Image (cartoon, rainbow, N blue to C red; front, side, top):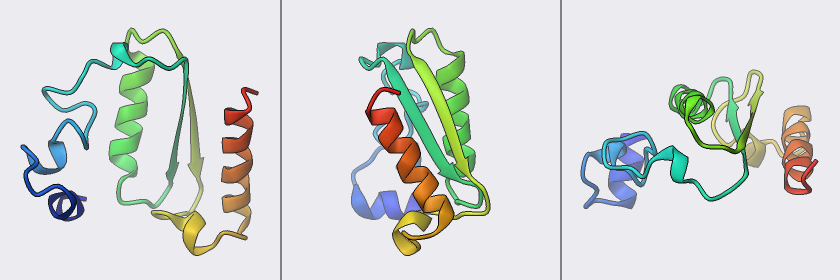
Length: 105
């Protein structure tokens, strides 16, 4: 993740812990300041970023932000699996969950 972020934003202070990449980094806006009412956080079980994504979800759920959080972890899947295998069962379940979330259900 650090290499990708440094390539995408070479001037980032703190590398992958720049507040634009890590919403829990020092200097990032407080989670309580989020202006939405709901957040769906998704990750693949074997994604290299899942540890950070889980930490974000936990921090958000424990924060004073008044909205609602939802979590979806795709079992056995890695990073952007839905692009590599868009017809697999987990990719379809992910898309169904996102559509349901966007529709407000």
